[in-house]
Image 1 (cartoon, one colour):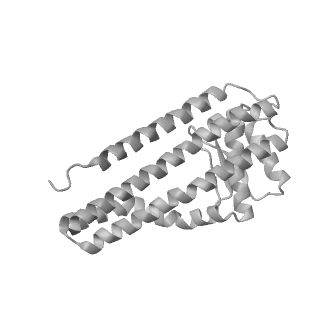
Image 2 (cartoon, rainbow, N blue to C red):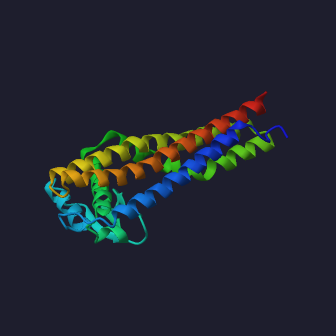
Image 3 (cartoon, one colour):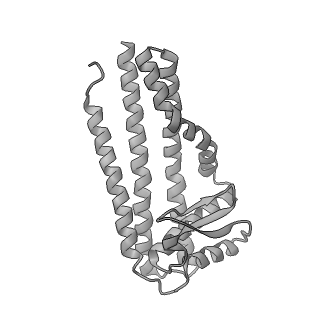
Length: 228
């Protein structure tokens, strides 16, 4: 069994465990601060619309979307979608999440370079997530060298997507906290909890990037053994 076991499996399992912890942390922190209402009292959807208006952004719609923490900004449709637990809530957690998505809108309208790069990588990352491993495994077991190399190259693009996502998400969170404080939506003692919610969410992206990098190292290791 030449490819049976090595220490990389342990690292991948550790990364998977950390990813699960990060996801649990997001849920826990969001749940905690979703019970703490902001003194301002405005619902998250209204805050998001006001933030967009302050920047003169009128081509983005704020809409409700089903699900839990399914909040996102779609630059293609011009929709800033807020989940059911965020849209009408005035909690510190909801305002932090909504402002984070507004931060992505700001990035889009300013032509923020990492965000533009991430958008360019989306089709390749989607292809890589679907095709990289089948190609690699087919090449490995059928001894088709070009398939092995192509699988690695495509998955490397997936890793790059995850890495580029990090500055995009962290920058959006910084913009969110600044906008909430400067706009008077949160007082100085309320920005800390909102920042904790966004930091917990940011940890999930870090763990996803680490997982992807370890998977890439694993593919390179298997390819190296195959070529010996």
